[in-house]
Length: 249
Image 1 (cartoon, rainbow, N blue to C red):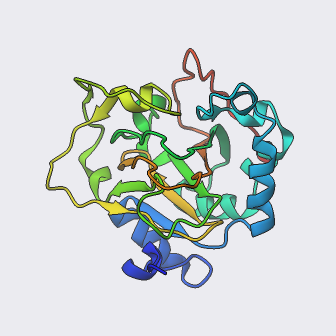
Image 2: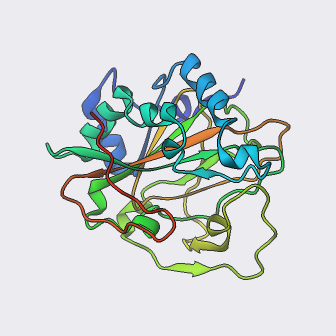
């Protein structure tokens, strides 16, 4: 079995050393914490995804805002383990609200996402007041399962210019916006392919550049993202996303 990214990088865990975990996030723009969700919770999330519109219609395109269709995903957004981490990373002693979610089916043959910053879509007034929690619902020990890719320290470059890609390949099982547009970065920038245990969370700073690989394995890379916003931080609602702050209590 390959080493996980936590093991490779010796990433400090919140449950063991909270200050070191926060420092790692601030320095690198991301953090990984194991055992945030239990195996039962992960399995139930996958099971519940079979009732989502993009599963039922067979498209298997990432389903946005699943908490609007299924109460289980709303409960996951309110998960106390995720909230504890986000409180330490972005709250500044202010209330944190849920904002958006997406369920990724990512079956065999799915197209990866282009390099991008999540601030591109939400445009938070304060880049320190918005965060993405990426949850792996399966073990990702190999590099061919559509793994998340992170470019550490790129959050220190501010909000980067977004460009439309030329000669865009046909995408499979992917949101067109995640293939068509990209934030360009130095080709020599450090890149980390994320290998994690099921139930792990990758916390992403709003300006850290990340994307994902094509899934060339025989397995589905089930995962979710939840995004969160600090109470005093303005954001763009979006014509399609129609983001609203969601109370987490």
